[in-house]
Amino acid sequence: MTMTAVSDSFSRTYPRTVASSEGGIVLRLMAADDAAAVLAFAQALPAHDLLFLPRDITQPKVMNAWVRAIDRGDIDSVLAVREGKVLGCAAVIRDPYSWSSHVAELRVLAAPGLRGSGMGHRLAREACALAIERGAEKLVARMTVDQRGAIAVFQALGFRPEALLSRHVKDRRGVAHDLVVLSHDVARFEAQMRAYGMSEVLGG
Figure 1: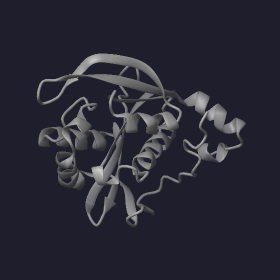
Figure 2 (figure 1 turned 60 degrees about the vertical axis):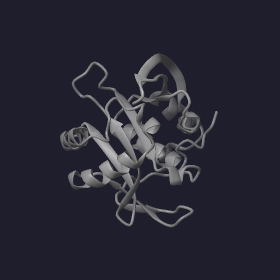
Figure 3 (figure 1 turned 45 degrees about the horizontal axis):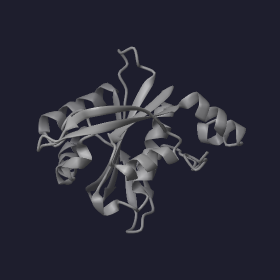
């Protein structure tokens, strides 16, 4: 069992600056006026990186819907920014009106230039901490089966495979890809943290 998942103490105060191999990166919550910068970030990503998302965020109308969901409180999005440029983002998505209102879906994207820097792991931890803070009882994340780096990041946080969705998405060439669903039980995680004397991670 890996206990490095969220062993850092997250104050979840924004904005705040974190260190990276290329200098400081600011973590802050996404707001409506970030839409254009996040759209540019998404459009610069390899198309395959976006396949796990239920909607194509390179489309302005989808980005506008994302912003409206943030305004409603259905999504929390954390951006990683340097000199005004978005380098990564993490989102916590909830549907308060569904039978799964206790579940939060986590989505993490990082610029290719930051792969291997640990920023994806940091953003995923940030999303986990935010979801738990918002009262989520179960966390889920989806990705294509060949996104091994992303799968490893979530498994290091304690996520485990729960389902395989065969031929669930098609890329822009019409090629079908499988999606893997990873999940994490928050109550079990909290019990593990307390057992290891790490209750400060939970804010208690």
